[in-house]
Amino acid sequence: MKRRMPWNDAHGNPVIVDTDSVSPLLLKTADETERQMLADARAVARHSLALLSEETPFNCEFVIRRLIEAVDAAVRVAEARAGEPNNG
Image (cartoon, rainbow, N blue to C red; front, side, top):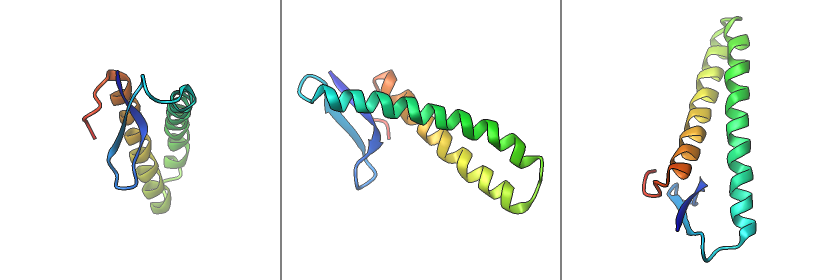
C-alpha cells in the first residue's frame, strides 16, 4: 500500500512510501508527526483570535502567515489519510 508522508522532499514534492517495504519506525514517526501538525494547527487557530483582538498590522500579518502554514499542514495530513498520494 502506498502512503504519503506528512512531509515533502528537498524539492518540495510529496514523499510517497510503500508501507510494506519501509520500517515500522518510519510509519510511527509519520503518525506522530501528523498528530503534532494537527495539534499545532489547533493551537494556531486558538491563539490567532487573541492576537487579532489587538489589531496591529504586525499581528494581522503574523496570524495570516501562521494560519496559512496550519492549513497547509492540515491539508497534507488529510491527503495522507485519504490515500491520495499524488496530490501535492
